[in-house]
Length: 343
Image (cartoon, rainbow, N blue to C red; front, side):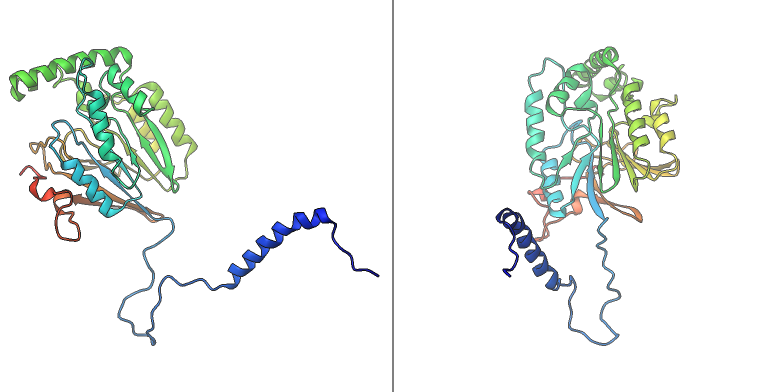
């Protein structure tokens, strides 16, 4: 009796499968190389533990703050170089990325091109939050939409939720009014100085202090929170401190929805470092990463936050730019000649 032979069409079908099985068997027989190797024997060892801080759920990112509102040259270039030394998985910010200006200014493209060129030098992705310099008025928001797309959005990374808010979301009609008031205020500042500007309508505008969000933005984030109830942490990034509005607004409804979950809020705008606890959670107002400094309300320094997340919680390190040095002991990108804090 002749031995049974597979039909040719089955041989063609099985050949790739047999090849894959051979590869799998080869790798399963090989021993995996341990990540920690030593040649010491006995119980006594010159170290205290072998449980390395390398949990697969752990990741780190950087938060940086305002680089405009009186941008000081070269600071942000140094910040990008320092972030590249630290190698975070990604970078987020809290707005005021360009100076902005009136709609008749021809510098909008130049400003955004300059920021994009510098941000693109980062090894890690950079996620943008819009500030009042970036988004005041329908003209500015139109440019943002053309170049950036959505002015508020969310994303998930390793089961951690990031909500990026737009605190300049006043509605088209009010946007036009605020834009006009702002342009008048900037003219007063340029022509008559800071004392006159402090008395201007824009300097005392409620929206200038704590911003606003629309009903549609509120509903968007309420829906996002509803759909993501079991994330390990939630981060909110917004430019202006919406919660400082004395009249409970739409952000208060988002805060109500956040109850019962772990979250942290980062904001900018004041150019002053002001950490606080609210609802038992951290609300951290960053100072500057190149913007004009104001130490009348507290410490004003160039810095960024190094945030590490794992299943046990969140750790936040505050890194002063003047202390992030390269291997030669210098501030990278020629930063040794710069001043990073208004004393």
